[in-house]
Image 1 (tube, rainbow, N blue to C red):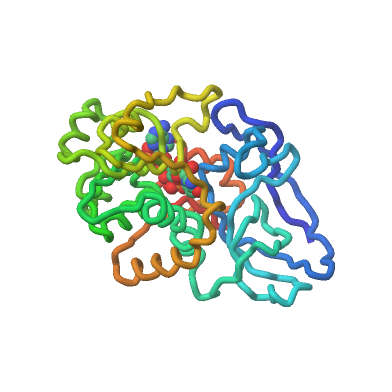
Image 2: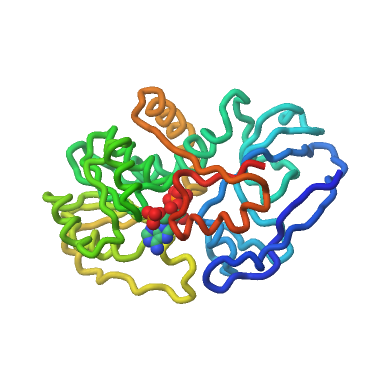
Length: 329
Ligand SMILES: NC(=O)c1ccc[n+]([C@@H]2O[C@H](COP(=O)([O-])OP(=O)(O)OC[C@H]3O[C@@H](n4cnc5c(N)ncnc54)[C@H](OP(=O)(O)O)[C@@H]3O)[C@@H](O)[C@H]2O)c1
């Protein structure tokens, strides 16, 4: 059977442009013992994809190679199987690719078919696990502290803020539009949301954080980084989750002076989720509790059809996505 897939045709320089991808027709393979075939139903679009397109070999995952199907996370249904652990009809989630069909891999998890894929990709997989691990395991939050979250209206940021709220923190977020800020304050219960595109970001941050910042959950880089860093309290923690403002840059942005780290006893810790999968069970149970108790809400932004990924991925970089960005195949 033939199916559509999208391969990397060349590496981007700067922004992702459509010409770096090529839509191809491939044939589903004849299965060998232990293999299974997945029809992908929903695919996640993630900022990290931009980093997977760079040729660097020292990151947490190898680069996608020219001529390879673009890597993604996704949900699908097993439609053919020579592996008893992955029977036909099972719903699976894992690393897939920009393709209508993918050969399954043993890292894929079988998930309850009654849980809808949008919820899985928005809360119970990379997005939610990242928010939980970042805030709870790495951030070590204490009730009464102030957390600042950049990229707060995004998929990870909005969950991180709600988790911090549930843990009793004062939650301040930055986002790129007034509409996103209203959503954070009025629907998600953030104490304050600041549009980082306004001119008086420093004053607004001072007003929002009268007691300084104990925890900074960094999703973006950009101007908020230096402003938050210089307002950190003693023994503050900075959780470096992502740097989307810089993924398209050819040259790295200079970092901050280290004196505050020394004098204030700051801890700055970067992380990528794959290094923390030992926390997946704890995180999933906690996320389920937050959802059941109404402490976590989310929204999704769904695109239609595999080719929509090619232009759609840039919604993440221009702020056009309103919630977890997903492609329905
Ligand atoms: N460490 C990990 O394992 C891990 C896992 C998942 C994600 N992440 C990281 O977490 C961050 C958020 O990812 P996500 O999946 O939740 O995406 P997302 O926040 O749903 O979407 C990306 C958002 O980033 C904002 N943005 C884009 N360019 C920006 C800029 N120059 N300055 C400030 N904000 C900008 C946009 O919102 P505005 O409208 O607010 O600008 C956009 O909507 C990314 O940096 C990602 O790489 C890390």
